[in-house]
Structure formats: structure tokens, C-alpha cells
Image 1 (tube, rainbow, N blue to C red):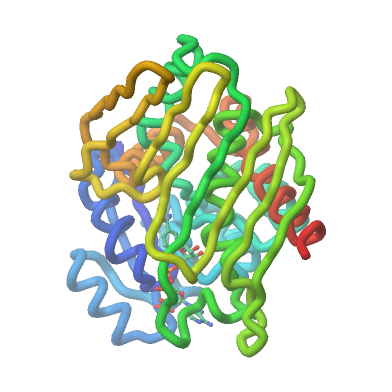
Image 2: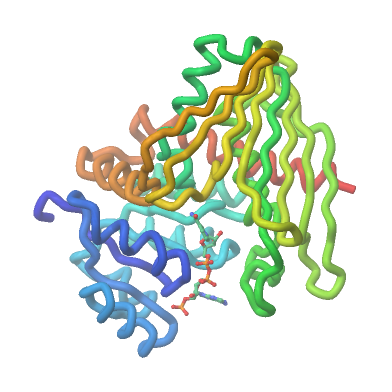
Length: 326
Ligand SMILES: NC(=O)c1ccc[n+]([C@@H]2O[C@H](COP(=O)([O-])OP(=O)(O)OC[C@H]3O[C@@H](n4cnc5c(N)ncnc54)[C@H](OP(=O)(O)O)[C@@H]3O)[C@@H](O)[C@H]2O)c1
């Protein structure tokens, strides 16, 4: 190690190419060592584009110059491959959601703790400062007492054959998109949210949910709802509505690095719009992971416990939505 975390990327995926690999390349605390694919030609093409070595999946795990693996495989493969990565003694940055169920997610945490390696789920929106600003506005009393959170993450139908339409690969709108408003509700209302109802729209041909809605309530009695799906025009926002006003965050989950977020604060007598500086949330996620790994932090470190607990809680909420849903 030369003061940088050396990444291996397991799977030549779309999000890796568009978002995470450029972020690793741009991060001063990280470098790309090797990219792996099931298809050697695909791995070579990615490797040429990013100036790193190419390998197969198992071969990548044997590379001495890989400290950490970024895992952007289909969601059902996160658990099995994540376990192999940790058993190989590498840190693990796994794409969201970390696994398909709470049991599988707890198993990943146990594996990381046992191996004494770092484990993070790549929910990059958590690294965008706009949400800390929302929390500060709430703490400052700008909307009074929070009463209702409404989060939405929806987009139009995907091409046939997309991994999100394949049940065996962990497809479905709840696992792919629903986890965003669920995690945002946890962020703003706390991990003690519980699910009190839900609905999922199943695609009978494909056998996956393509849209849904969940109703939750916090221990303090704040209501939350999450809407998600592959059947709507694009929408990625949340609203926190309080006793004296509300805050609307548009482009809440996937703003581009150049997008200046606008927080809209609506009160009875006026509307205010705060335009914030753009932030590169993929770079933020990679930089935070690399800094933690360089500082010797692993899943055993006290400072990692809250993030791991929230990760498991999201998976428990997903299980509960499935259980409650009509
Ligand atoms: N954080 C974010 O903002 C964000 C955004 C989008 C997606 N994601 C997450 O990232 C993961 C990947 O999503 P994606 O859109 O990048 O998917 P994708 O483009 O379909 O990539 C998945 C990759 O997995 C590998 N793979 C291994 N076994 C496979 C199989 N049986 N079928 C298909 N692919 C297989 C393939 O790589 P090889 O062919 O090279 O082996 C493929 O390129 C998902 O968990 C998703 O939820 C996160």
C-alpha cells in the first residue's frame, strides 16, 4: 500500500463503469488495481479504459495488490461473493442493497466481523451533504415538529433482460428502488421505524414486484411512506412535513455530481429555496471508505456500528414490507 487503498472491481457492471470506477480513479486515497468479469474480453475492455489489470472473479480474490473489493454484482450474488471477498481477507464495499434479506445481511456483518475487515453498503446518497442540511433545518425548528415523511424513487420500465426483472438475481422494485426511501426515512426519523402496511404490484410474467408502497411509523409517532417502482416517470425526492412547514428535497437519491441541489422550505406565509453547492456523492462514498480502511477501521470498530446496524435495519424493513404487502 502506498497510502492508497487498492481496489478490485468484481463484475463489469453499468454502475461500476458510469459512476464508481471513475470515482475510484478520481479519489486521492484510492487506486484501481484490477477489474474482473465472467467474460475475459469484457474485463480487458474495462481494464484498458481504466488503466488497470483484468482478471476472472476467483483470480481477482487472489491478487496481492487488492486491499478492497467493490462488488456491483446482481443483488442475489452480493451475499455469496461478499462472503468470498471477506474470507480472502479483503475489505468489502458492496452495492446497495447489501443482500436480499435480513438474515443474509446479518451473515455478511458476521463474516466481516470475523475476518476483521471493513464492510460498507454503497448507499452513496448518505454521503451527499444536502441531507445533513435538512436535518439541521429540522433541528433549527424551520418546519416545527416532524409529522410525516414521504419518500419516492421511481423510474420508467427497463430493457427486457435487465437484472432487476430476474427474481433469481434479486430483482424487483422493492430491493432495487424501495430501499432508498426506506433508508432516507431511517436517516431522518431513526432506525426504530416499523412497517405497518404495504402493497406490491407483481409482474406475473416476470415474477418480480415492479412497483410498491410501504407505510411505516416511528417510535415517536411520525408517519412515513415509501413509494417505488419501474413504472413511473422519473422521480427521486422526499418531503418532510412538520407542524409549521415542510421541506421538499428533489433529486434526493441520485443527483449528478454537477447538480446544485435545491431545498424548498414551504411555510404558511412564505416559500424559500436554498440552492446548495453540487457534491459528488460517489466520490464521497469511495473517499470515506478508503479513509476508514487506511485508518485501520473494520466492522469491529465502534464507529462502524451505527452504519452496520442501519444496513441490517433496512433489510429487516424490506422483509417486513414483503410480509405486510398485499
Ligand atoms: N449505488 C447506486 O447508485 C447504484 C446504481 C445502480 C445499481 N446499483 C446496484 O449495483 C448492482 C448492479 O447494478 P447494475 O445496474 O450495474 O447491473 P448490471 O449492469 O446488470 O451489472 C451486473 C454485473 O454483474 C455481473 N454478473 C454476474 N453474474 C451475472 C448474472 N447471472 N447475470 C447478470 N450479470 C451478472 C456482470 O458482470 P460480468 O459480465 O463482467 O461478469 C454484470 O455486468 C445492483 O445490486 C444494483 O442495485 C447501485
